[in-house]
Length: 283
Image (tube, rainbow, N blue to C red; front, side, top):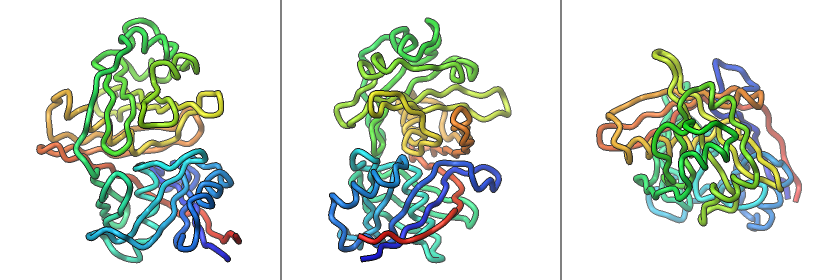
């Protein structure tokens, strides 16, 4: 049986077709087993592949399952925006059913915006700031504010870094990342680094995770962008706030993400999506 897919890039920059984070979207996954979905995600070997199914929950327009090459995720940002762009068919608002809950996505024609399915949940980090700095290959004092585990749909370790230069210099240790950055809710260790830009400049962010015995860097991480919003809520930063994040430069995939946290703590992630190609797979 043939199954259609599309390849899109999410969080692209100024119309650059090869910027952003790649995503594979299977537009109609009816008839596929979970094992086949996982195998296809491994076959395409992108950070995530999504599979669209009819909704089973009231209020949802589609049921979307998200797979990395190794496991299924409850929520992820760039798959949410990219999948919506594929299935919208002219609609300006859709609600996606995911493991994390119902995620509403809207578009203004140029960009796509999601609202997180749940308010942020946070927990303390057991490692000290200097232990985290050492984990990242950075000097003592590089972690500038309180790090937190944050979950707005997918738990991640959010680490504030003193300067963009230090973010660029980060070189995580696999052993230490595995020791300090492993969440019991995830099948990988990870760290999300961010630093405020100079006035008028974008914040700089990087997301590292472990895979197959090594440390990998993600080009653009919408769920972590959402969790940065959760960090802002938890640490009582001035709200509302709107910031732009730069990511992916170190891996040759420049990406731009928009983050807005409203006065009530609602968290919104925005990005542009470009379709790159499409095809079919016979199973």
